[in-house]
Length: 456
Image 1: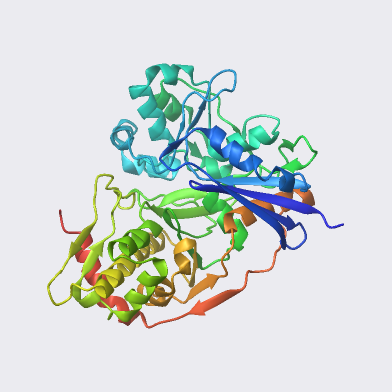
Image 2: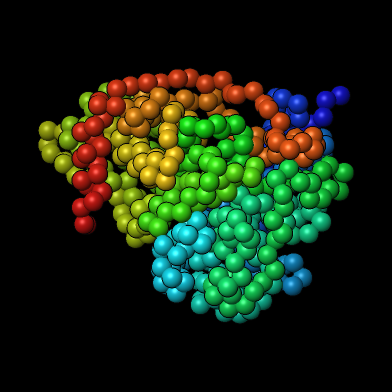
């Protein structure tokens, strides 16, 4: 019988599990279960959702867990959860992000030392928020984990353990290791932090005898699942929007646009994240009284530029640029262009322009995009696939829909089983290819940039 590996994606909205053949990544079974909505969550909900795939997990010879980055899981000295985990999309710590920036030398010092500049998403800012607003919970906090760390520990890790990819999103880790002064400065004392395992290291066993991989963050899992190569830029349109690429050297962006993350293999993963992504499409669809397919059809029925309508898609605040209190803006509306088709087109163009800005920030850090891989729920939109090549200015590859984060976690589990220096080669996913002339979208991007940079 072939060896089997399980990969877990514990995302903001749900748990997905894939069971794959270790030799080639072919999926033999899968399962999913929802999580509660919101910006904080009791970790027990993640565990309960994962438990619904217990029968599938028990068929695996090795298990890897990838999960949403940045979430603050505070534990007391007995390992009990102190308070619901604050998730990456919780922006209440925006004031604390500002104060931490200034207390520890300003944006450039953070970028050079940590590889990122604090914004509300990062764990370090959530620790400071808890210290200031829930001092008793802060005093009780004896250990701080990330979501994937907690799930790996619950599955049977021998100790609290993480990987360099997810650790790099905390705001208190650098490639040289943890930075205790930043943790103390945020929380008020130094809690236990998970050991950073080596890529491909086995970190324990489940109760049914499967090896446990170190796990990683969701974006690092997606990079591993997609098998990224030099010149590949991934744009993911899910609950959040992300643009990232694998690099040999760490990024240090004092502007704070690019987070200088590590990846799950020993390399680096410069990444830009936006708060607003697929929900821009679903909100626009609801506004014009249709579903996502109807929105796509309406957008494609409009002319490029949406008849002069331009949207700024910061519906829920924004992370890149750092505008946690921003709202969406629609300009250029007249009686002549006030159609559902133009509104649909403006929403799709706005989403893609926001993500194209993200790719530009990567390019400013030395990434040279050769092609763009478009993934996530938003990539299922025909309008998104059709308009993306012109707005991004590169050929667009759309891999067939799959749970790439979970597949990356499964590939990491296969790596642990193999005991090799590099992860196993799995075949590239089937995909469709899309091209367009970038000049077709030049006016769209110019108008978008003018609106983005207008004080409101």
